[in-house]
Length: 128
Image (cartoon, rainbow, N blue to C red; front, side, top):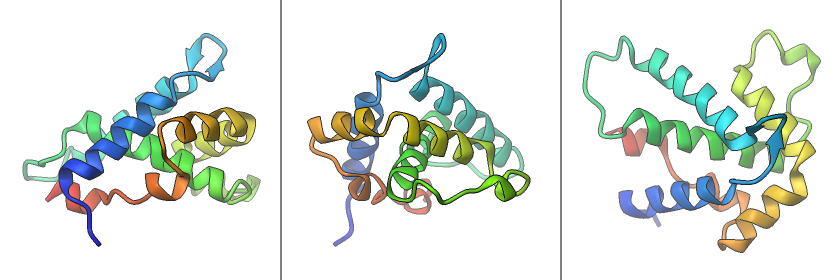
């Protein structure tokens, strides 16, 4: 069963809002990852040549929560050998997911989400 656009965006927003907690120094983990994903999404769209139905900020939220979900499900996905060929935001997400695993899972559980559910929204569908 495919989800509606509204359902997909609701999952993204609930997961993102629930991550408001873990801190890395003076900044929130969520905000650090969001800023990294927002910059990457802007670069990606620079030469798209067409308008998108998904704002940059919404796409950055999607990638922020999905990178964390992927890292929670596969905490050892990336190794030091992957540093030169993997997006930095993915590596940060893995590091944060390992460091704050219990807090992130509890935050999502509190709003009725699992990492698998957070991975359900589809970027390509939302962009169309």
